[in-house]
Length: 204
Image (cartoon, rainbow, N blue to C red; front, top):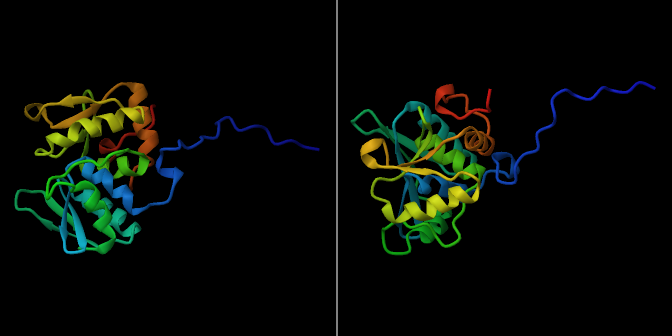
């Protein structure tokens, strides 16, 4: 009886928090709100929007919205960036209610957490490599959100250093070989539209 030799490459087990651990669902869109994304309500519906700085982000985000059954469109902003936004949908109303507890001001709800799919959306919208690590950009007017978002990053093994607005932020920088490997594990494989330099990869 012949035996198959063991593979020289161990089978990778996906993290409980990684993109491989669950199917895409609407609450994943909270990852955009952790960054610069915005949500607005109209009657019993809501819309999510985010301004991005590169065309590849548009392609990735429109596909991510579509995977969750939410139609999306995009338009140039006039300053070289692009506005990506969903249609108004009743399915987005629960997310809006959770994040807009005080009128139109965005706040992470109690118990807010991050996982691979939420991080993937945040990174697709506003992640960028820099010489010291990888930046996850924040909404410039969302100061009240930043502490809860930082805590959520730390909870999944990604403690981030705050980058001031005048120094390329506001953003949290993920730095260090182990943390960057953790980020790559959580967000999953690079989307085909994303340039390799703009997506975290496994350590060489």
